[in-house]
Length: 446
Image 1 (tube, rainbow, N blue to C red):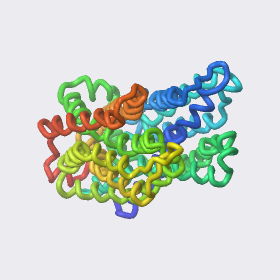
Image 2 (tube, rainbow, N blue to C red; image 1 turned 45 degrees about the horizontal axis):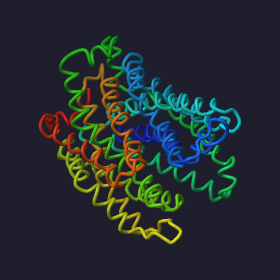
Image 3 (tube, one colour; image 1 turned 30 degrees about the vertical axis):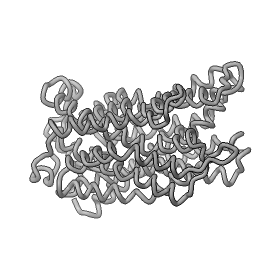
């Protein structure tokens, strides 16, 4: 495949995946505001701010819990009927459920029905994302030129952080244009409704794409799997490989990703009492400045292997996470009113430091996962360990961290969970995971 065509494929897939991450992360960016509208008024209302925020975080986490179910559902379809149309379906489900959140009545209007509907739509988002990621990285990996699979799939990996950045940017822009009062009253719906435009663009782009040539070759040979779940997880060797990747790579990657980005935002706002808008601006700038790190480490993994880059990131996070958060505390000045003030340049620099291990663990992961399984079960086998790790290990980071604060623990104790999981993953990966031989890693993906 011509290099220009390869990059068009990367761009087309990444655009749709970017929109899906934007949809999924909007809830986290507006957690406090959604807590007010869906848990904090009316007969069902909760008054304590910490309880409100915890309820919203639990709802946010609900989308993570069902991601493995989506991985099995859509992974099976992707191996049976093809990559292209499966992740077109996931994009539709994600976009429509996000738009629907923007149309929901609040708890003040319909009582308990409001949070129930919000949770149901959040579950649909989780199901959709469970199928989106595997399809996107498999589609790109199967068409990447030899020796550049790490680079090309790392571009798709970048969309997770850029999707968070996009959600932050849209919320900040609307707050500035509408004013805080209007945004709180009705403007919060607009970021969700914007998903209708993004959905239309994403569907148009994906309909213009051709099916993966690797999958087409499978179909032509009559080799496409009819029972991909059984083949992937009902036989000893692929199951062993999936479990090793889950505990030796993905679990650690997941806690590092969410601790260094989402928890960092919550920590600034909820613990250090930094103004929410200021904290969001700092994280947005750090995400944009750190985006080039992903293709950089993806390309490095093409040269030296996936394992040393990813395990190096886990070890860096294990030793550096708590010191960087301590540096945030030291850099924050508490005013007489109780709010926190932190120099913007200093804050962005610390958040950018946190993005270094994020890029190291996340950039090579997609290539490593896709290389580890044969084409006939690849969509299913890649999706489940990824979403078990990110849905269950990573998705619990904000809740566990905030729960420790709610029970009066020292703020840094909330970081012990991601540090422990990162250490465990580095140990498992270091002892039992191995890279593919260089010749296979740099060769075509069949």
